[in-house]
Amino acid sequence: GGSLLLFVTTVGQSLGGPLRRTALLAPHGGADPGGGPNGFQINKTARYAGITTADTHPDAWRLVVTGPAGTVRLGRADLLRLPQHSASLPIACVEGWSTADQWWRGVRLRDLAALAGYDVDPPDALVESLQRHGAFRRAALRANQVSDPRSLLALHVNGEALSPDHGYPARIIVPAAPGVHNTKWVARLTFGDL
Image 1 (tube, rainbow, N blue to C red):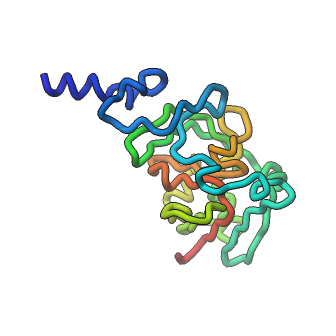
Image 2 (cartoon, rainbow, N blue to C red; image 1 turned 135 degrees about the horizontal axis):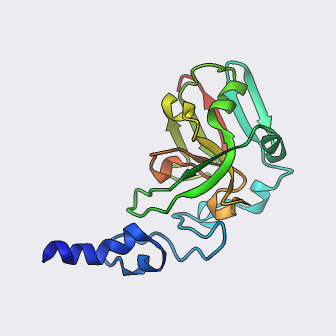
């Protein structure tokens, strides 16, 4: 009986959608994210993280990629000119909620590692966000995560540009990594010894 009660009060957490509100004893994530391609759960809004439109404006934002080949600065238009790849991946938050698979599109992390000087066997990477404060404004990714062909610096989700709350202009999406390691509002990627 206790197991059935626990199942009934947490099932919305696993299934998502309108049933998420029935998850009485499990984290629900943030408010209802609305509909459309960016209409899936988030844990931190751009406003909460202190990200402004000035920070992400195409004239101001540059991704800084660093490795043994030096430093490369890429605007969003530069990233869109690089080979684009897609992956269908969920987000699983450490707060206990998860999303269904979303269709992400962007530049493979291993291709960015190659720009930094690692044509073969990409190394570990340090990802840094525009977010100025907080424990998860930086994340370390292991070499196997960087080399996975599904690991992306995502620019689009479900056929549309990322919304500010989902990390516009660019975010990390990596298979089987907690949501906090799928860094939003990426400003810098450093490849090599961390």
